[in-house]
Length: 304
Ligand SMILES: [Fe+2]
Ligand SMILES: [Fe+2]
Image (cartoon, rainbow, N blue to C red):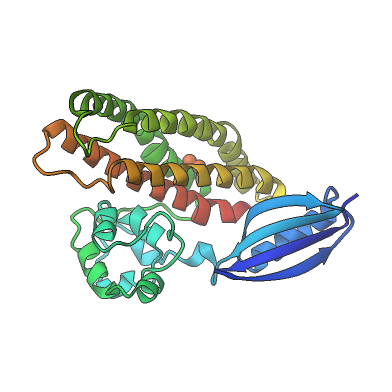
């Protein structure tokens, strides 16, 4: 019987640890204690291991409530936003609300996949980037900010994720794979050809489809039910933890896409198919980052 849980908290390179005592990891009391502790301190569980009667949790610390990091004024279409409004928004929220934001972030060498949970101001400060200039460019994008549903309306929020991301991934990935095969077949001897991109896109389509099916068949219906009954509990914490781990795998795939396409930068004078392929891959990356952010940072924390 495991009776102690050690929580190792990562603050960047600094690590702190704390012990939580209870009646056994398998028993309800310790589990609830640990999850409540993590929720109260905005800790995200990134790994769980067990050794010699001690369960070790590796967690990441978010400096403020993740759920509150998207300001309401970004959620309403038609609301005028100023560059100042965007400085304290997270990178993930900006990607979700401003179609084309990843082009701006690429231009300023901002890693939007790894830093989705940090605000524009925090990241700019760390990397010596002019946050105001980035925010101005985001405000000039023609299609933002888009309308996100009420974050606490679980039905509407899940429906939005299903329509805007699950369906769109399924609609667009097959075409992108065909295009990648064509470009590889025709331009495979070009020194900058994205050799291996079609196979990577196939693997993403397969893994994503399995992942989305789990959310559609199990997790999302359970969340709808819990919200409907007003009985939110920690019962979904484990399946959510599994979904988060799969998101980490998708994030790795996004890194591979960046590598295979040289960050979606086209070589000089390439054909229309190659252009369409990189444009489509860029959109897939943006959609994946936004999709994972909305689940990881907005939807999941409400049920953990
Ligand atoms: Fe999803
Ligand atoms: Fe997901």
